[in-house]
Amino acid sequence: MLVHRYLKENEIDDIAYNVARGAANGTNNAVSTDMESFVYPAMHYTEYYYGVSLNRSQALYIAKRAQIDYSSIIRTFNETGVAI
Image (cartoon, rainbow, N blue to C red):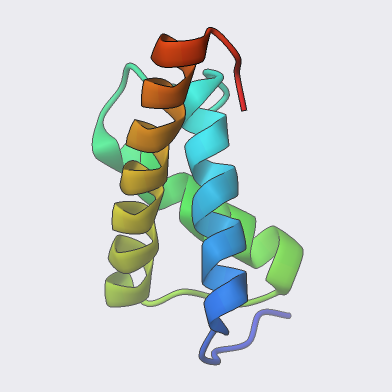
């Protein structure tokens, strides 16, 4: 059963980072739309690992954080050749 609650900052960080990693390694269809690469995976990850149902604004906030993490992961890979 999913619950509605506020996520802690460290939970948001964890979700955003894992969604970004999924986009970077291709498991989230990184070549597709932002919704398919970041928003839907954020919702599914949160439901699966935390049992929390996100509302629209929470999902978009986490997706935006994931996009920032994604950019950082890709930049690090391009500079070092090492995947995070």
